[in-house]
Image (cartoon, rainbow, N blue to C red; front, side):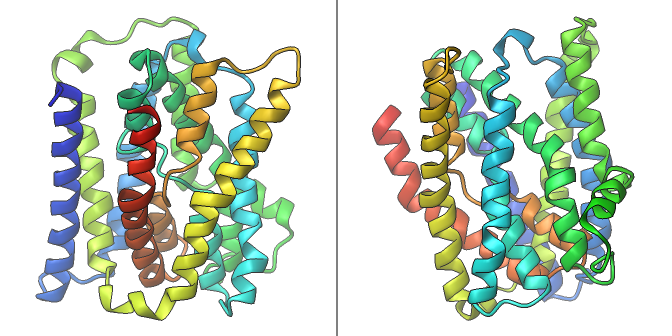
Length: 324
């Protein structure tokens, strides 16, 4: 087992342990499940913002590609906004529509899954990781104008009757948008070649923050998780799996085909990164945003769990067969 694989393995185990800890804490009455909202707020605003800034500061500017700035938002918009009428057809109401839209639009593209898969499956690995992190950066920037307004519209009394343009403006001014601004600062520092603080690497600050962020995210989900709810959402589970693992890869294929018709096609490695990132399951932040915007967190939790499980059992073996 390579050092990077070992790191991912132990990080995944830590996340699973944190999820189980939150689940157990609620079941035994040690922690009230409502505490999860505060945990997720501080995790996203302070911990994840810092991790994004420090990680993107080290992103090689030459590894970025402007086409990704088109492909990623289009995929997010198709997944999120295309899910709304489908969710209504399934009988979802209000908060549940918001959950389905967020789950359809946001994928687990970060180092804990999508970017790591790019790193471990594709060569050269470091450049593949850089492309993967670029996807994360673009997701962070796109989530404020594309996802936050949906979360507000379908959340509890948080602007559901406001014009969409006003919802977008409010989203940019929301403290929960801090990860987007932190990402922009990190990219700017990388582009301007500002020296990265050596102590950050020497002291393993990013690694520590990633574990802190993983604990906050997974423990908070565990507090809300009720596996007994799973059977109530069979149609939603099936629909989300079809969108994440069939529709969005097809959308990615069409976009890559269109880009390759231009005089400036994406390179082979960048195309493979897009393929990998288009197949990932619903993001952990799906549950966290549902929590922060007062959507149906219990539904979001079980959708995330089962969508991830389907990915591990069905999609991941295919990816390893193709590029492993």
